Structures are given as C-alpha cells and as structure tokens.
Length: 102
Ligand SMILES: [Zn+2]
Image 1 (cartoon, rainbow, N blue to C red):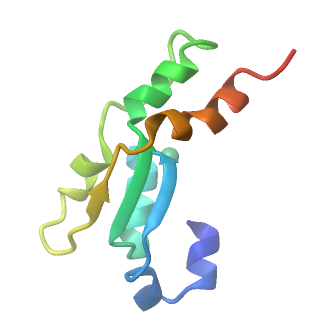
Image 2: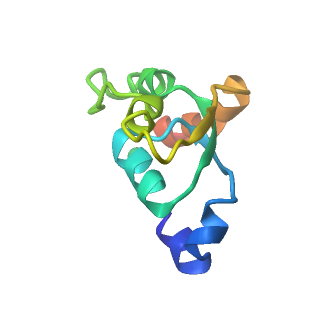
C-alpha cells in the first residue's frame, strides 16, 4: 500500500481494484481505507490463512475481524469487497511461505 500511495494519486487509487491472495487484516484494511482504495478482491478468508499458519504455529497471532467489518465502519466511503475467490490457488503462495522446504 505504501508503494501504491507513492506511485498513484488519491483519485487514481479510488479507481483501482486491490487484488490480494488473502483477506486484508484489520490493519491493512484500515490502510486500504485511508489510502482511498474503494474495491478489494481477495482469495482466502483471513481465517483460512490462519488455518494454514496453524500448521507451523498452533496459536497464530490474529485479530478476529474481517475486512468487511472494518470497511463497514465508514458510512460515507464504501468499499466493494469480493471474496473469497479461487481459495485453493490463493493458498499456494502462503503454503510455500509457511512451510518452507527442509
Ligand atoms: Zn495485514
């Protein structure tokens, strides 16, 4: 999001769709909102990502709050959310990160 904010003007950000493999956490959802992005597509629910992390860490450090809950806090700047979609494919890069080859 920092790189996108350096590259694009606020008006441009409001016309872009942020596509991510996993649902933005509460912090990233807040950054998305304040950057002015108004559409998000994600692959995995945050809970599904936490399940992947649980393979290596049975007690992952997660906030139990969806990006939709964060975005719904604004009545004046709605953000369109589509997800989860293509969950199996979206989980692949996270499996490689969470379970490195030994
Ligand atoms: Zn995050």
